[in-house]
Image 1 (cartoon, rainbow, N blue to C red):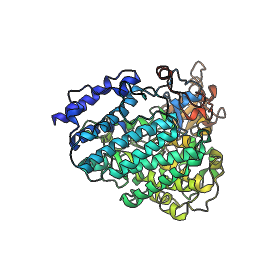
Image 2 (image 1 turned 120 degrees about the vertical axis):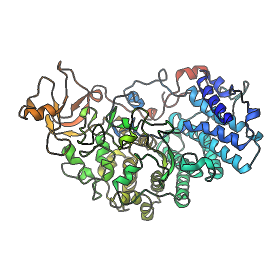
Image 3 (image 1 turned 120 degrees about the horizontal axis):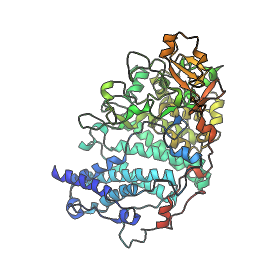
Image 4 (image 1 turned 90 degrees about the vertical axis):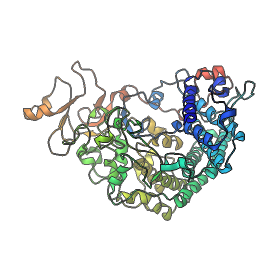
Length: 600
């Protein structure tokens, strides 16, 4: 339809043509041949317009910036902060593209009064617009704490044009109002919801569940914001919204009896349209020339951490860290008798499907050795290059709702065995893991990691959340809301190396890689037959001039893989400052009413 094509193109041109002045991009009307007086006439116009919002929501397939990552070769924001490299002078964010996204939502809402047609359908699209406004402000609250609330497009002489931040409480309640409207008015049976790739009532409930859990726990643990007395209201909302999805959504876990393969199917299948676990998902298809980059999770710029690997339970339900000698188990041993989700997340000795399907994959210790395989497209047909991977990716999945419900109940002090059985134990049952009971023993390793968590059950729920949702982009926000900045500060490590020399990393009893002092010293592999030695993948702690490489062993010639950057530039988490981000200094110059928070 020409009208749709023209208007969507106009939206793209609007974004490209933005200027740097906040006044301009908060007040400016779109420069397009279709004016608001002509365009906003029917629900069909609203459908066309709201289609432009979907670029604001996307799936995540990494945990960069969290303790689930051992080492990352890119410029992670958290890493920069912890090494003292971020300030209001060089920080990103608070940018014009973000505020343009808000303005585009408000522009539609400002013109709803002129739309004629089915009132219920009009409210449906208003609900979708408010869903995206709520999502916009949720991200802003997480990052900046207090932000200015704009519920309309501003005129030239609007007194709010250069106002300062509104209190967090006001903005949060405004987000809550938007989400309540979305839940009450978005339909599940209109054509735009086909395949669950568009926002539905249940997707709005899922965002409400996520938002309320975040705000409730943030208020509970962050006394510096002065809202501790009002945290339970949000935990109650997290419980009720999750419960509504559980009872009325018709969702369930993918659990066909195939255990680990059922779990894998959620992250590497060509389509998730028929998955009963998907509340909302993103479709990537070759036919539409829309692909993703999920192949980059393997050996691209990061690996997963020993901390994450150690968190997975043993198959009998006991902590791996309670096993005698657990901290000297080599790579080929750590996967034995473990939670099956571990081998679906972290590359294991039997993994195939990268450059060859005929030989086991050789890990690379330069990033730690625990390479990520969750989300990696196993079928080469689905893995064809940069932005040419064709796998469906979750945006909201039912497992998160079960975790939200269990955590909110535990944080409220009201959880019981029935709650565990309908949430955590369904997740464990899918992969044939033992159930969690209310009488679980306290794990001292978890207790040390989360000293502010109350009780063994809550700690186990946090463990379950970490392993079930690993690499899905939750971990950073979880640590932030739990006030667990100490875990950001910890330098992460990779796999254990018993000695310099050759190692078997494929489980066939033959050496595959060698970690050596430098290219001039290969004495530790001198006794290996020449043909086998020539096939080894070699990695050096120092180059031929004696300069350190990016990794070393924690005990010198043995130990866990550690990273020279962490050793030479120690990480330091300053609380509460680093739970927030500064506003770029240029924005505070343009608008002096904007104030930095908590030491920035």
